[in-house]
Amino acid sequence: MRLFIILAGLAMVGSYFVPWLEPPFAGPELSPSSLIGDNLQQMITEGPWQNWVFLGGFAAAGLAVITALVGRGSALFTFLAGLSPVVLIVYFRTRAEELTSDIGLPFAVDFQDVGQAYELVGDFIRAGLYMYLGGAFILLLAGLAMTVGRN
Image (cartoon, rainbow, N blue to C red):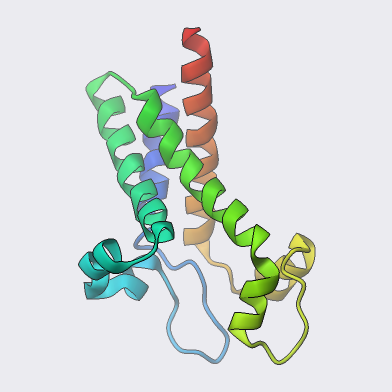
C-alpha cells in the first residue's frame, strides 16, 4: 500500500509542473505552475475557496508521500489529496451551465455532457492532467482502504 501511495502522490505532486493542456493557436502548453507563476501567495490569501482545495490537494499529496516514506502512511493526507479533485469536479459540474456563459464560447457546448466536453478538449489534454487525476484516484482509494481497513 505504501508503494502505491508514494507513486500516486509523486504523480500528483509532479503534475503541478507537467503540462496539462496544449491549447490550439494559443501559445505554450499550460500547467498549474505556469499559470500560477509568482501569484501563489496572492491566490492563497485573496482567492476563493476553490484555490485552497486545488493547491491543498498538492500539499496533501506531498505530505502523504512523506508520511509513507517515513513508514506511517497517513490515511487523512492520502484521503484528502484524493478527495480534492472530486470536490472541485462536483462543484464545477453543478455550475457548468453558468460557467459556460462566463467563458463566452462562440459555439454551443454542454459541459454537463462529459462525452461532449471530452470530445471538445480531448486532443489538447497532456500528461499532467492524467497524472493529477490518476494519482488522485489511487490516493482516494488508498485513503478509503486505510480508513475502512482500521475499523
